Length: 264
Image 1 (cartoon, rainbow, N blue to C red):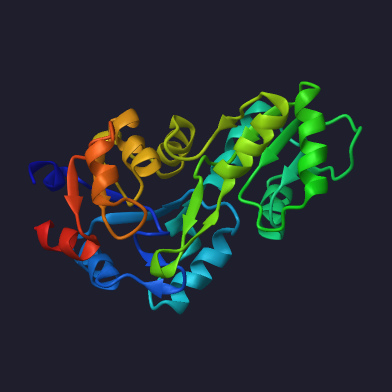
Image 2 (cartoon, rainbow, N blue to C red):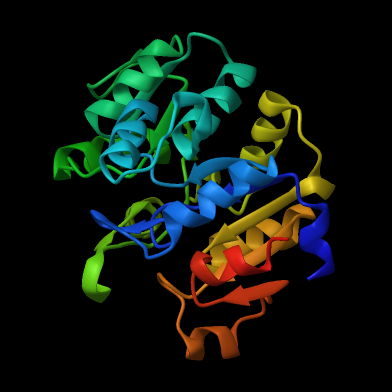
């Protein structure tokens, strides 16, 4: 557990790590309280772009966890940071929820909802309001060469009792089947989201740990970006997946309840 002694900030996945659906994972509150006692920072880092910061703060507070806007960082926010570096006030066709639309508009982007317009980007988020019309228009733009960005690559979003709902990765697969094209992906495990966090919060990679339940996003984020990686078995990953994966975490715990006991 030597690596844990050097960690000054934990990047915490939420879905499958802190909660499942609307149920707090056992030990989550106590884990966060211990980090506060030790003066160790934590940032809730989620690929789920269907909600904005305020929604996550509201949800965490309802679950009994004190959280503020600066404690939450999502793939949606990372995408706005990335795109603002590419082109400020860009015209965007966005496949996303009202929350994500609000986040993009606050960041200065013009949202276009019709076909055959002169736009700069197509952005795909975790759109729980998705329609065939949205997918059709997006595919037309992408096939015609408009730059295509996705907030994150997760195939499924975990829910309570082992259930799930299809996530942005499944939508990426649909668009690829139609257009043959894949997006630039911003969220975990890609470097764009970690670079944005390091820049915003003035952090160092050597002092960061990525904690999450998914091998191909959370654990790969740690491996690809030089962070300490910690897998919790409270969400998507099961023992068979762990045996077969090429993404081997630095540490494995049943949940963050067990991780708490190793923080001295």
